[in-house]
Image (cartoon, rainbow, N blue to C red; front, side):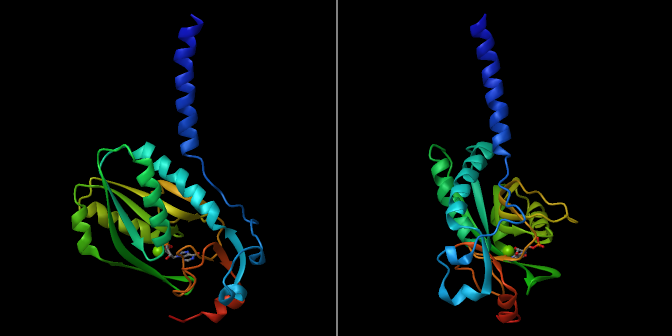
Length: 235
Ligand code: IMP
Ligand code: MG
């Protein structure tokens, strides 16, 4: 009797725990900031940044787990990965590598595609979203698509993109996001897989830019006021 009870209860508990773990969030608290002097910040960027908020190593570790969660949630079906350039280029590469490992035994391959959306100038939203590379979207018709984007702030860019994908007839879409800002959302957008939830601060690095600068920076950092001033209106 005890054996039957064990067999019935344990798998259920394990499954619930797995579900809970899969939806667990990595939250960066408001005051979590580390001195730039403690990291290998390129000399040319030193005065422009006020703090490191997510070091590269932490991103790599989190992306590995995120890929495992994506795989256990989406399963072994064919999957088209859509990279939203330019901001997600590093995240995309890391995620594709980890998904390749996670999907090692899958009978179906993944494909990769690239598009661009632009909605920001300086640190303020312009309110309009431009999608470049739309012709590629027809290739995604009838496919399972994982949209890989860098950051969700207002959600305007991502919701517009998801809407466009739905219109072009994708079978199913999910979103994988490097960071999600802790701000009240006026626009409701699906955030399926989020690597980090961060405070409402303007960040750069690991692909993210300020007027096209800082994308090559290894770590995710907060800009200093002088840095914001220095690269204002510069392309
Ligand atoms: P949303 O449409 O307001 O969600 O903004 C999304 C886009 O704005 C992102 O894809 C980024 O290009 C840009 N963005 C928003 N916040 C930041 C930030 O803190 N650093 C760099 N880019 C940002
Ligand atoms: Mg972007």
